[in-house]
Amino acid sequence: IIPSDKGAVVTKAVKGKPGKKKKSPPVKKAAGRVKIYANRYELLKKLGEGGMATVYLVRDRTDKRELALKILPASRLTPEICDYFKYEFSAMTKFNHPNVAAVHDFGFAAEGGDAFFTLEYVAGHELISAASDLTFEERYELLVQVCRGLDYLHSRGFIHYDIKPSNILVALYDGRPV
Image (cartoon, rainbow, N blue to C red; front, side, top):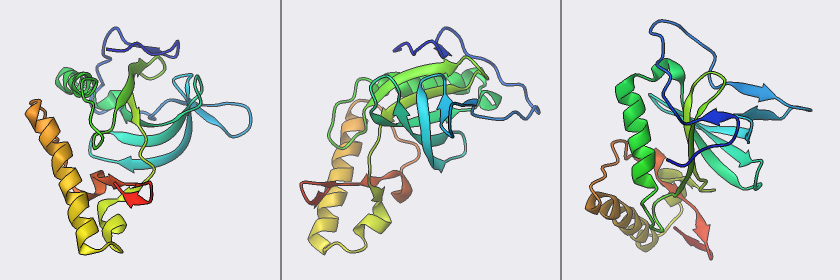
């Protein structure tokens, strides 16, 4: 597991307290209106929310690159879920494929105990909206790329348990949808 900055600890999981609702994620307001997570990531906007985690577009203050930040609130961190979240990150560190987002950092927020990891931000659109104006051949090529990415994951023993059009992002690369 890749260690995080001073604003996060990576030594142990913080078990959530059932029934206790807490504000998540712990975000500090810096000068102006900038919100900072784990003393490192500037929150730019919320990208999505699933049953377990929330994903934000952030700017890493150490190297200024934009990333996606996936946060699993401490209130949902059972030992089993925490282990799976660590496994998900650890498995993704071994992936290197043009159709699979790369991961960068993992940690637990010192304030609040949320688990998080950062991954490559894909500045694109969800599959359905991205494909709406494409020709049949372009749609076909996109689906081939999705299959290549899934085949790559499956060949390494990893199953994406939440594959759906809204989790497939399409961006333009050299004028082509990828």
